[in-house]
Length: 81
Image (cartoon, rainbow, N blue to C red; front, side):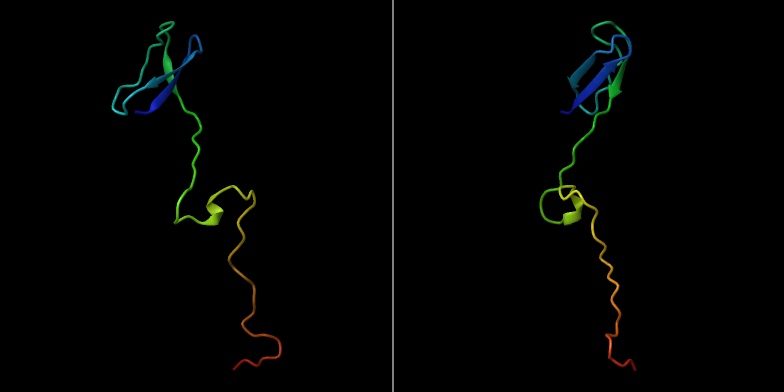
């Protein structure tokens, strides 16, 4: 079961509740009776296993290099037909 975080708009307390995804969201603060709203937090994503590119991760901290190269099809001194 996922953990949902709620914040009361009256007393500003934060509560965490284990709920099924099919359960109705809480609307009343158990401490003061005020209105509860769901709080959305950040979620970390980790790419593990095969099937991912090296550039999918931020571990190197730089932008991925371009795959396109600027090489001419004819080298110097060669004749084209």
